Image (cartoon, rainbow, N blue to C red; front, top):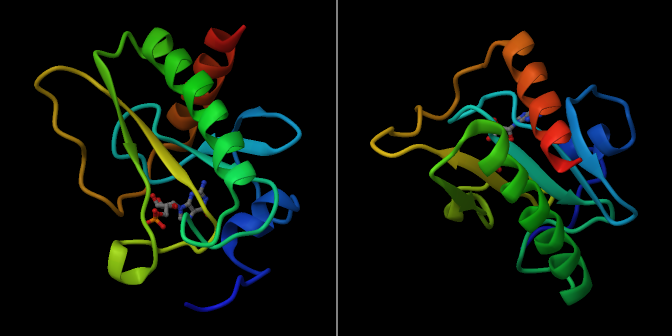
Length: 139
Ligand code: 5GP
């Protein structure tokens, strides 16, 4: 497995070098919107400290991410009147990973609705509104 690359896109987002639509943050994790959302409200939870994925993450990094996933996912249920949540997490290219900083996808789902195909840029105004709706539901 390769080593962590400090110039991956999510490291740049954490350093504020690339903009993102923030949903939530605490000392250990950051949650922001995916710019190619596969469902309305599709967001990502990442640790603030470096690791490529689940395979090299520490128990503390994983625990911190899961606590934030739990919080944000429940807020998504409220914000979008969702019927469920899909949680996705990919490890290395063969596992479907494209950005090599650990991240968990939170995808609000509705009965009978398929996820949109990957790789289509979303509408930035809509994504901004979704970030605000999730943040508001977190209180
Ligand atoms: P994965 O590595 O789990 O396959 O997916 C990486 C995710 O990052 C994709 O869902 C993609 O849409 C998202 N993504 C790629 N580049 C950016 C970016 O610059 N900003 C944000 N917010 N998301 C991105």
